Image (cartoon, rainbow, N blue to C red; front, top):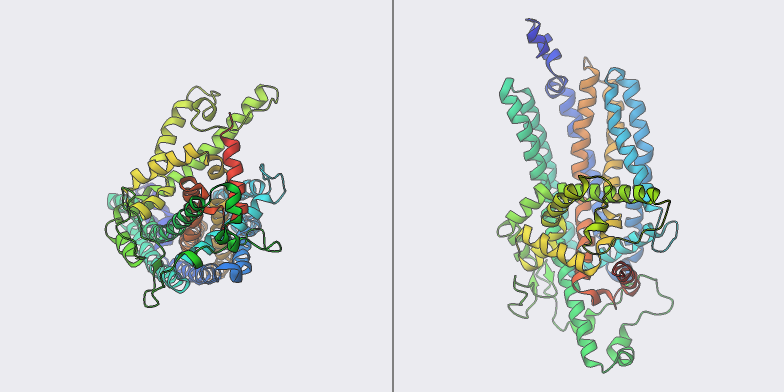
Length: 521
């Protein structure tokens, strides 16, 4: 410590000089602001949960689902507005802590990139094509989720998880503050352990929700694939399929919405729903070898029990490294775009085709000598630790690394990789988390400035940073099931390409066109 090296014996001076983090952790203002920040973010998360996961299935809830997706899509604009406000707040209320403005500036750069990305659709060429497709995709995922799981049950499950997450966040804060206050080498050891432990524990809660919704999505789409195969098997030709009486009853009316689903389960599913059972999956989940133990409907209670016992190791591993793999995948994509742009400039602006399959020469442009090797290591890590593997963990009870590797092979071989890379779901969900959390700390920052006491500028900014992390965790928890549902749809489409062909024909044709274009050499 600087104070100790200068032989300053005043204990108060030692605390102030040693670390502004200690000053923030020991202050009563930090306890109050972080608690109210977590409470406000929990209330916002509950509101989002009600708007998103309590919508009706089928055409009756189509407008509600699209309205929820629209609110998530415009959250990017909210984040773009709030970040400059945070920069102004820091410069006005804590001028000596001006280096903290780099955090909102970095987030502002991220939001500008997300805004640019979501407004450009290379497939349709429309200005808002990606946003329109995201709304349709989110509406479809929520519709399938409401068909495979009972709405009231999934709502109660997410609501209960939010309450558990709230208490975990408060416990995380208490342990982190206690670790920061610990003296010497003990504090240096306990502080990173507290950071990692809290991040892992809160991540596990969110991944449990992801595992459960992935099970429902995978089950429903696998049954849709079976139904389509049955219709195709009963028809003698493609023309017969159009004239098949069962298929004709499922055809959407001409004036229906473009992405309105068609229910196939009413005629083919002859088994009655058990009203006493809160969690219903329409088909039996598969074992690791792909076989079905029996033909009876499967309750989701065993899936929840499996997530807490048998599959908990996979869930815990995903909670620890899944976010890292997702972030690394984003960096890989940005690196590829930069290298391809650099190579186009070197070639005088000549057109380069889309990256295809596992072609390493195209996936790793030889612009920098070390890039190919670095890309290889990073890509291998992403393949074996991608959170997309939760879909197979839920449906086939595989280990996390095996499921991730299998899903990656399916995606790369099916040509779905460009869709995964260009998908804006994770970006928009992240923007929603950042925008809401930044708005909360902007409000609490103004409140804290009027009751600041003797807090230094650095301690003031540290308290706001703590509050931002806790608020982000709460909002991330409520949006993770939606993101996991869309990821499960992608995985199921790669594995069962015909599963969306009848119920969601336009989404099926868009995904099919992109994969076909990606496989053209």
